[in-house]
Length: 102
Image 1 (spheres, rainbow, N blue to C red):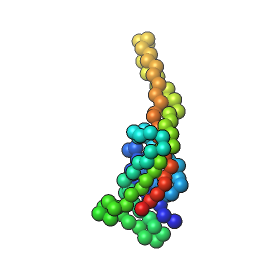
Image 2: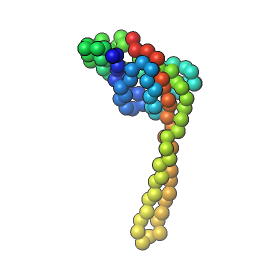
Image 3: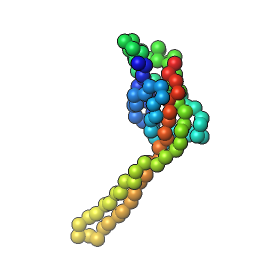
Image 4: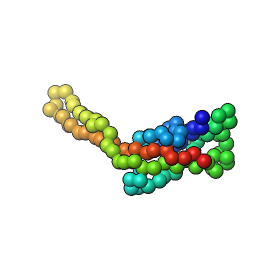
């Protein structure tokens, strides 16, 4: 079993070939490929965490589609002053399919 820990969109994700991962929005069109930096590589019993060895490792992924996350409601309220402020947020996301770890 080969898997890698990659840095994607400000977070670390555990990926293997064929996995579908949702990360923060990446620039690129649907169907284009992106390379993710590996932080750790596990190949069976062999674990690679050396920075110079990981510089040679490439994790490639294909952009499946762009998405939006769930709606988050933000309500600010102060008692007895009549202050109310209502806002919302939807995070922009990208769905990736991992195509190779080499």
